[in-house]
Image (cartoon, rainbow, N blue to C red; front, side, top):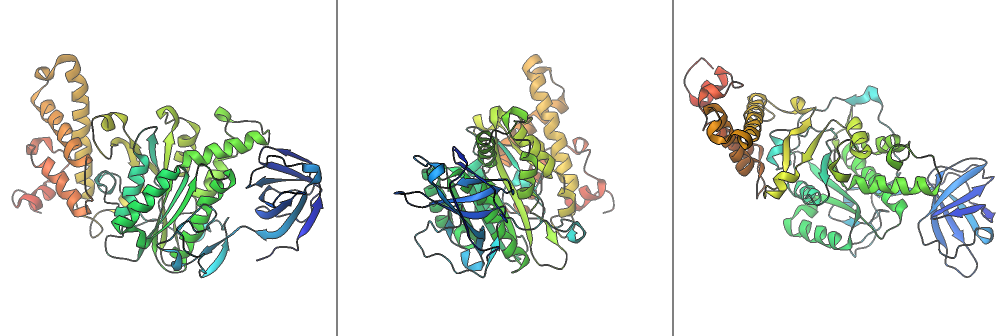
Length: 461
């Protein structure tokens, strides 16, 4: 548990916001816990966020008002940040530091592991395969989530990104009944949202196989940066030591990145794009790359990070850098949300790059790829026809375009919009119900063999 013996220094060099600077430190470790004491004040907690022999930077978790750096007694405890992990945590709720917020005692757990974890050895990383059923048709059918994948949701201010996260937590499962768990970590949410999440997951029954880590806006910034790492430490233990397939849902990644920017400003770092630190890509990678499957180990870790795009700008540094690290994106539409479609997933800019690895044959249905491609093709034509109709009127459209326009309306109303969870079988059936209303000549992506299997006539299956 301990890296070195505790070392105490009398007087810090300087303080800036939540940061404390300490010179001439020896054997200091990144992530090491720190205790800061000043006369007449209760002890403050902190963590080393930048380690060096000449200068180390400590971020304090407690209020720094009235702190006099010169009179502070700074103790480097020799202990690095660790998290308690184990199956005992299922059904429990914690803050971003892993401390209980559900009124129950702290768990004993099965182990205490470092928060920072270890990067996966590329030679032992297996190719993602099979899929996780989220219960959301636009994901399961059109942008399938594959075990070991990182698939972010790009939301916007006022869009139901958190609601979608909660629906995924409630509805996700391994479709063939394999052992499954969810780790949900919220970053920068309000106290009201915390209470809503707890009540919602309890009433739906999802809490029994879920571990919650809830960081609120009033909590220290360092906790917001540690929360996803505490959650991932638990997810990795459940996956690679107990054999569960674990889905990690993180919301909101934008709050995490804003905290990174605040810290960089306090440290007077040279800003990068739009004021965010140049190290943000690397920092995000240390979180998002902790997903996958390991050779010789049971289970898997899959991630769905939710992020709010500032000004709905998909080129903003947060979604832009996240897109470089992950394998696709689910994009929420403000227009669909305005028209009452929920969840308002826009399937055209959405993409799951690993979809083909998790669908077809015994995984979902044999014709899944053709079925999805046909839905995409007709819906795309319908969206284009909608734009044309705004110019020339619906009467000016050709017959095929009018059918596509009607299909697009039904697709959004009956397939994208859903009030209840759908299994993959329900999702495929809903898609076929839309396609069967079209003439065969419109279904250019459906092979004759698939058509014959479905309708029992025509070419040989």
